[in-house]
Image 1 (cartoon, helix red, strand yellow):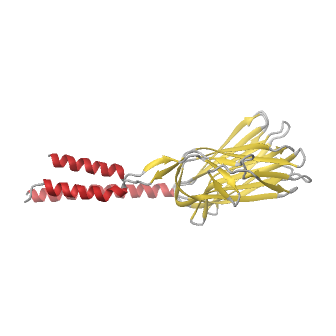
Image 2 (image 1 turned 90 degrees about the vertical axis):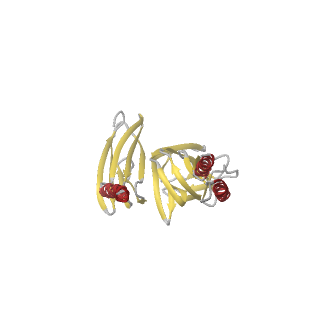
Image 3 (image 1 turned 120 degrees about the vertical axis):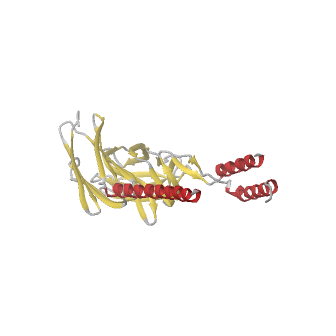
Length: 205
Length: 130
């Protein structure tokens, strides 16, 4: 009876230690960095300025490193910094957030803001949209596409990112990443122990 | 006699398991052939801004395409994109438009799934109400 109890305790412990545990990835803010990189580390100055000429467009995509897990349902906030060469310049801004997996883009959320008024002073703007819960398969990379259209016939618009001062970024709902079960490394020694206990204590036929 | 009972019990368990698997498989087939769903909504953010939203969800993998036309700019506004969706996935599109007191905006959304037009919707929005 005593041996059985020990065996059961060891088996329960084994089950617990080898079970993957979900953990919240923190932070859930991704910054736009030079080199088209989407990173959780806040960039440092100097920042990067993109000039969008009159009636011109800007289109670029940033990628994170490899990730997998579940993104909770919730709100995506794209916070970006812009100004213009004169007041009265209006732009249309679209951001698309999703994941890139096996050479395919899977969109989670797209938000478009039409006729956003810019001023001469650099200011932050925010576009928000909701997304459903999404499972991201292993080997995926998160991506953020930004498309800006300058509607003014004469003036330029400017988009800022990759800086501490103008930290253009996207805030996502919590990303739950399954933690690697470190207890796997204990699996072999514990099974060996279990075997030795059973061999020693059980009556031989 | 005991052996026969044992065989019967084991057979019964195997039968139950296989029946459960068959039901699960059938339910899976049912859900995969059900229609791709599109949910439309519009929200008044403030007196000068409205949000037009659609959520596309599907129990099966596929490709979609959508177009959005709006009379809210001098030139007709349009936006379209190709997108892929995995089984059980969803995609949300939000469009913020600025409202003018003297003008009703018409925003037309069309959505294609695997090359077939599956949904069309026109939102009419104006300042003070949607």
